[in-house]
Amino acid sequence: HGSYQLLMNHLNFISFNFDEDLLICTGDLVDKGDENLECISLLKKPWFRTVRGNHEELCIKGLYDLKLRQLHERNGGEWFYQLPSHQQLEIIKSFEGLPIVIELNLKNKKIGVVHADIDIHEWKAFKQDVAKGDYAISGITSAYTNALWGRGRIKKHSEEYDVVENIDAIYLGHTIVKKMTQIDNCYYIDVGSSFTNKLCVVKIK
Image (cartoon, rainbow, N blue to C red):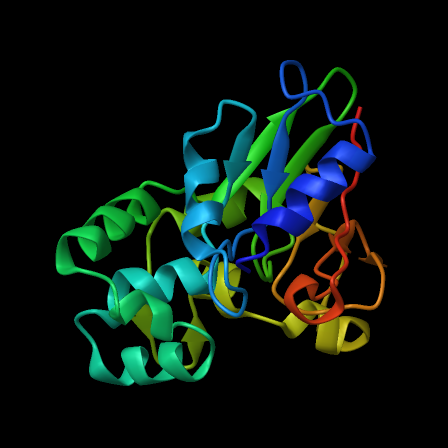
């Protein structure tokens, strides 16, 4: 969320190796903080990957949808609409190339990264549904929409949710938590950097 220097300071503090390590972000590089263009520059770094968050989605769609633009501007996105049009289009193009889901296959585990929520309890089925895009069926929210905007698992986990099968761990952002919070095999790591001046970086081997 536009907190570039906070990130770089923290990476140096934990001795992040820019030649050998890989940093994967849960999305929302922009808005709320003041270093949005600096955070976007991370997309060109060989040591950095990210999924798309709802704030990247707002940049993509807000330029052509007045209601989404108003929502975006109310939530820290006003900087985007002050940019020259060619720069807006460049940013949109870079955000459109971001995946909704990242999967890592390590020696003894499989790790997933999603921005907001996963409401399907089988990893492959979730990915297949995400690939269908933002479809609309009465009474059903697509996995794509949930992946960018949802909060169901963290709000109602005791009622409707269970372990996601065929994946060892999933790391998510979007919903601010005081510290890393585990629900089933899902780990929420957004500690509200633009408000708290803190980051949660999880080391995975």
